[in-house]
Picture 1 (tube, rainbow, N blue to C red):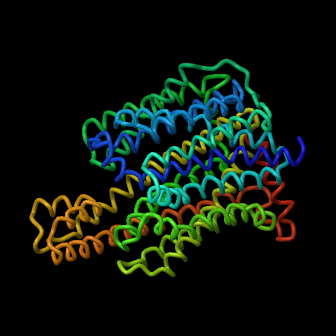
Picture 2 (spheres, one colour; picture 1 turned 90 degrees about the vertical axis):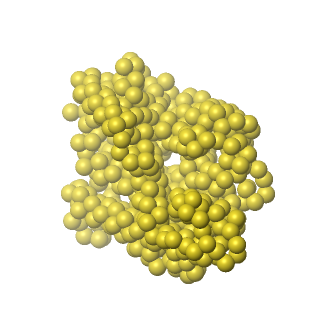
Picture 3 (cartoon, rainbow, N blue to C red; picture 1 turned 135 degrees about the horizontal axis):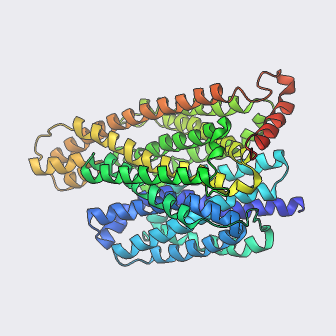
Length: 520
């Protein structure tokens, strides 16, 4: 394959990743508008938000292995068609039930796209150094898309109706449907028998586990939560036992015998956990505390988006002269510093601090995740690249779902606890104001001017307190991930080499990771 075709293929593979990551964060801006239009119940609204991540997390392992067997390009094309059709249905939904069904189909389509794109990169870029740069571009699309979601959402909602946040997916999927057959090679390294029972066990185990964790974070522990948690863990234990006995497992658990693979997957999970906690609070802080419009709030997140892309693209260059553990660990240390700096943000909104926070977090997360995905692909045998990619994406989805649910619940609990009684606000309205900052704004709209101003000021201070707690937790997690990377990746070959030997050392590490998980 010529260099021009390889890099053109990379552009095609980056498109779905960009859109899927945008979809993870853009919906939050559209919730108020679609709620006013469709009038969903609180349960229906929960499913509108959560069904996408539920199905995406539950189907990734299955779809990654399916692509390894029927062809990764073929699955990518099928997924693109499903994702594009689901986007059209979501954009023009007329009822909450219709939107829930469309979001479910989006989750199904997304599950076919993510592992296929990452696994195909290994086929398109056999050279280790070219592949590292290609994965950095792929990671930049994923991380940048998550940061660009609020910007795009703010712009669209300022000019169009809420369905426009879904409609933008369709033309990009058309480009993918045209470009994939022309530029991407077919890759089908595992033509063996597909184990249907393992597929059922993986889905049946992941879905109740995700449901239990998200519900417990939002509503607390209850009997249904415990039953769902026990059922999910039991089914996953049965799934794991079955995989150890099969000659051709759906998920080769020996992948986790590689310390590099396990560290990379854990880094992805905890990083997204911390980042999505930030992304839950930051847009509300900008719009409801500082009073920005959706578009202006999105523009103030440009430093985060730009730094994420820059960090991802700089990571391969840094890895030529530094050991991977220092680039990954250093990136997460930068992210930890940025999250800690976020606790300096107050109700008045220091713009300089906001920019510094975005630059530090974006550059650090971008650099770290560009290389963790390289580690995951390099560690896995070529015939299991799709399965390895699906494990990485499942970690992303678990981290994202849990970050929003757990850190969101923690922050809102602190907010409710710090929102004291405000003169002139009836007890019933005060209770509604304690639910969310948006609820406080709605209550204030029906109060006299003095009482409304007092409520909004008190609510803003309480929300910032909750946000500080979340950012502090996220900073500690990021610091732990940095230490973990530096300590646990130092046993790789060449870790003690002198700086002048670092380029050769990086190649040696890649060679080691290529062979470490070969079938024993």
